[in-house]
Image 1 (cartoon, rainbow, N blue to C red):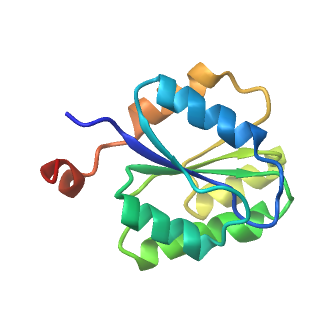
Image 2 (cartoon, rainbow, N blue to C red):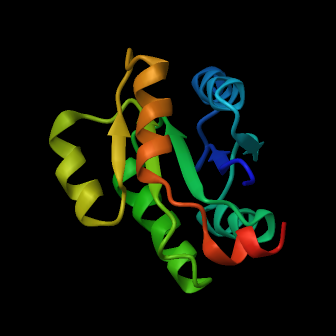
Length: 138
């Protein structure tokens, strides 16, 4: 069975990607394939990369404060490409009071600063089904 394929992206104009790189490394070390898109990605670029890379989940790292705008737009862009079944998780500086809004708009889980890497890895392993069509092509 092929490993989970996870896209890690930085939506918006946020220029700090240390956390995204740490998550990417932790997921890779846990045996997942990780595609990191780099900084300053639009929601459309992220969704297109998810489609092209045939990923099982998308992780978004955001520190800019634009999470209530950008994260739902990523979910919408994924749905527009037929990828509405892909879990989308987020991390970064996201106030606790904004998490219910994000979950109501398609974000599967939000991980705040200081969340143990093992917690994130286990969550992804248990909440991310391998996409059926992707498995048949390997």
